[in-house]
Image (cartoon, rainbow, N blue to C red):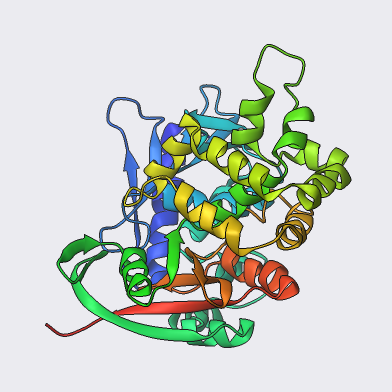
Length: 376
């Protein structure tokens, strides 16, 4: 295969996806100067707009690097790519572990096709077609009748609530005097009016809470302990590394169960003061400051047993279980709960896995709030 043959295959793949979708979801892009720099990108107005699935062949055309560009895309497709390629990312194209990429042999174009289908939102309905299990006619019928958000919520037994707000433009809403808000911000504002404290942080809040409770062991058992690198910094930023969890799970849980409240609060403050944590949080959730105050309240609202139970389950699959957490963590008089905010899409694969494999076994209280536009 050469550069022109790859271009034609990718261009044909884009046509195939748009044909199945009954509309233009993606388009093919190739740089004029560096022809090897190719990508499948989302059309304006789609869920993948301003994200890219980059496809870069090496000079000898033996491997292709597939990378995920865009914060939302990384969150949605990371675990899918790990399962599809059978490994963690080969590396990251940018600092701060951004834009992960996987190496795929050039002859394994079916992997690129599956990644592209997933990127366009067709992955779970297209695998059967790849395997020849259903006809194209049947697939078209499935594509035209996707599972609704209501049906998904009924399947996982999560309440679905409807909330109305003024929609200014795609992805931008107005609440009171504030305009240009994300859907999550609208819901946070409404909850505050009900004296319910919340934070748009997905799983980061709970993850840092667990990390803070186990910080001393994570430092002691860091892969950098006894080297010139800082094991404390690794514990703060790296958290529950797979190799550490496998070897020291019992020690980690003992630390969580025995930590005092004062020490837990001090560890939370130390983690939130770390520049790397601050950079990630403010870049991912730019509308909010660092979550120290909320995490302090969260630590006041739960006990060590609550943290230990989540950690015990989390450590059985720390790579996948960091994804899919609901957008908002909420604190009120009834305790801690979680809210997933939706405006125009359904629950993703990682979110359904969270509901079935984490929330249900632990008895976590969760619901979905669907934000809908109101008339002017």
